[in-house]
Image (cartoon, rainbow, N blue to C red; front, top):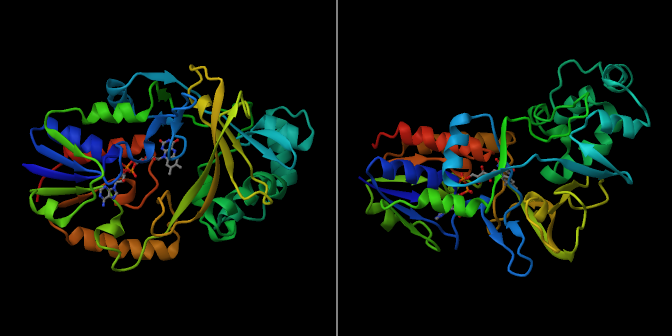
Length: 367
Ligand SMILES: Cc1cc2nc3c(=O)[nH]c(=O)nc-3n(C[C@H](O)[C@H](O)[C@H](O)COP(=O)(O)OP(=O)(O)OC[C@H]3O[C@@H](n4cnc5c(N)ncnc54)[C@H](O)[C@@H]3O)c2cc1C
């Protein structure tokens, strides 16, 4: 069967590989000049640093099948992600842990003392059923830590008050009462030694797959195929006829310095008086490499316009209502599979993206 796949990100690439191995003929159309979607990495020609072009990507998963899959296509180097924050004139470790608490309050608490201190003197215990991000934060960490690390960052990230965001967002950011400052808890964590783009190239390297870069989707191309797999924006497939689904985009102010600029991969800036949320120093995502110079991104979120790269789906109430309408249209389409972070309008980590593509390929039954 002839299958047309729109998008050469992880979703499109994994789906292409699995369906090609099952004997189908695959054509992949990609509007950008490169494969790998938002995971794209490239070497900076001036410094040699491996740059995560659309923002830093750290691979972490609890799914042993996905880990087996990616390690077949790239050599992974162990990598533990750590994040620092410059807040109110001091540097702290994140996520909020025993070190952060002791440093912030000028204490030498052990785990039990810290837990009791937060619960008895900080947490707003009268909030019994937190509905918003703000309520959830005040219940968990109390007003002082909330103001220092979460309120300003969240406002900048989402462009709205944390009081208007669902509590579920914060449930993903645990507070720790030990000195563990590993950002992720998954058992499998690492970075592809040469970056994500060679890994995706290896996934797409199959005689049954043709990839066309700089080639946006057209209805004519679809007419030649027996089935279409769409990993572009869900609303884009329908020419946004019901309105546009809301996204946040990121402005990356890229700069280069000699030496080591900040001594870590990610420094968050939660203070409200700075417009950016974080600075990422890309050579620290490949600590096994040595480079004299350094490439950095200063990251500022804002509302996503028509011409911007959509990064984070907003998924507030009005977006969810619109999403339901598009989902109904999508369900009524025959011969089309919608897949991936844009095709389903969800934030998906890479491992989940790969798992969903593997499962979709395994259950593929053309209409
Ligand atoms: C800032 C940021 C940081 C992230 N960090 C992490 C991280 O640390 N760890 C992690 O696991 N995940 C991370 N992610 C998530 C990760 O980026 C996604 O899991 C992954 O990109 C999803 O792949 P995808 O193929 O579904 O989508 P995409 O990568 O967006 O690929 C879709 C592709 O479709 C193409 N396309 C769209 N429309 C058309 C069209 N009409 N015609 C032709 N081509 C089209 C696009 O150009 C794009 O290349 C991060 C995401 C963001 C936004």
